[in-house]
Amino acid sequence: MMHTPRVLSARQAADLVQDGDIVTVSSSSGLGCPDAVLGGLGQRYEETRSPKNLTSVHPIAAGDMWGIKGIDHIARPGLLSRVVAGSYPSGPSSAEPPKIWQMIENNEIEAYNFPSGVLYQLHRAAAAKQPGVLSKVGLDTFVDPRIGAGRMNTITPDAFVRVHELDGQEWLFYDALVPDVAIIRATTADTHGNLTFEEEASPLGALDLAYAAHNNGGVVIAQVKYLAEGGSLSPQAVQVPGILVDALVLAPDQLQTTQTQYDPAISGELRRPLSTLEPVPFTLEKIMARRAAAELQSGEIANLGFGVSALVPHVLVEEGLANAVSWVIEQGPVGGVPLLDFVFGVAQNPDAIMQSSDQFTLLQGGGFEHSLLSFLEIDRHGNVNVHSLPKRRHVTAGIGGFADITSSAPSIVFVGSFTAGRRDIGIEDGALQIRADGPHTKFVNEVDSPTFSGKRALANGQKVLYVTERAVLELRPEGLTVIEIAPGVDLQRDVLGKSEFELLVDPNLTTMSAELFVPQLQNLILSTLPEHPRMQAVQA
Image (cartoon, rainbow, N blue to C red; front, side, top):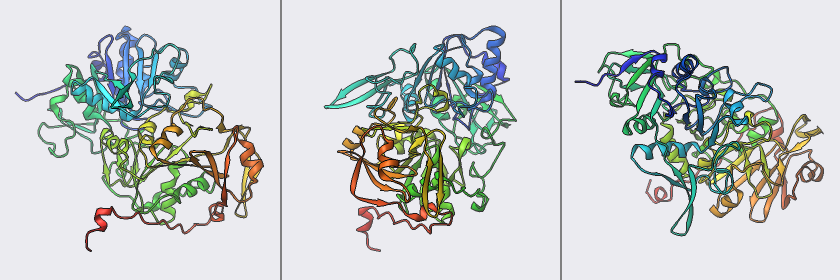
């Protein structure tokens, strides 16, 4: 007899969850969140005060700041006792923190922040009945148990990760998390439970989460937009087979992203003209993005993070170089133009859309040339903090794929402003005019919490640059070294004097190109990435 999952309401599906369950959710900050099912779970708890003491696992995130969505559906004392996530809802400091952040800051819940790629690997380990994952991702960062073990408050115990030595090398061993329930999302299910993702911006990690729950005797709940006749879906299109799915929840109004009803250009169903993209305003952020773009080579594979660095692909579009670099984002898109702000994680006109877990195989293995990322703080060791801002933690999303990416990236460009707070910095006649500087420097003696280890990057032979609006710095064995300053900037007053620690200065210090500081196009030319040495040996 053909397997046939039950079609349930979101509230009925919530009855499949039992006290103490580990519930894993396939979603990201702005896309793919099974909000209807999570809402049903929150509704059940309001009605019955059950289930209790759940552990919620989110390899990337679940929902963002736009109202009660994602994890905030279940962020209730008593319902949730522990959360393990790659990242958390984020938003402006002026907004009320999401409920999950309030619970974390009030010590109402145990909370861990682990690298997203590792969390996906832990699902594969659980599915294969392996004890966990051995990885160098997270060494010498706040995830390392010698520093913080990924704990987010004082009631969270030191668990799930420990240092292990193998053949004279240090590794982190992460214990597998075995889910009792997997909540995933797709576009279409047939009556046999086969799932396709044609309108999704990414399948994220739905398959691996389903394997992990199913193989360990758990249940898999799939939220979908459409229901089709059994056997009517193309086998090549099915990304989660129906044999893994126990229950279907129809949500015909599910959004494609938090802010998108449906856009076929981000699900790969059509290619939209690049002229439809909004031009990047001429700001300090654009100047930094322009300087970061100059580090790239045509033909490269490059990774991108949220923040100022996300402007770089749009700078290349303006310069007529839209296809010069193949962008890879942790959520799954390959190629195309990554979009901005709270739809970051999707791309317009992608060439491919991979599972996040497969994308992290590329990223953890260093199979790309550049990563462009943002920062909150940088210290004298070259360490970077991107996940923790004291007393304002809810404005940050957490580690996400940052540690997975930086563990093996051959070249990293961190992009961000030199100071923080209210400031008055203008751009006039191809030069920077610092009329009133920010009261807080981002170059501090010790970062609040390390997300990236400068010491480990040097040991690995990685190239690391820090691009700001007023200077470019390089991580060298002898220390952070200023290699360029912006026109109009006083080296001592505006750069060296604005750091809590002593910055070194390259004896061949140069001035950043004045073309960066004018609104007109730069006519940017990228050098070409050399062919693989074996390809060079092949006769044309």
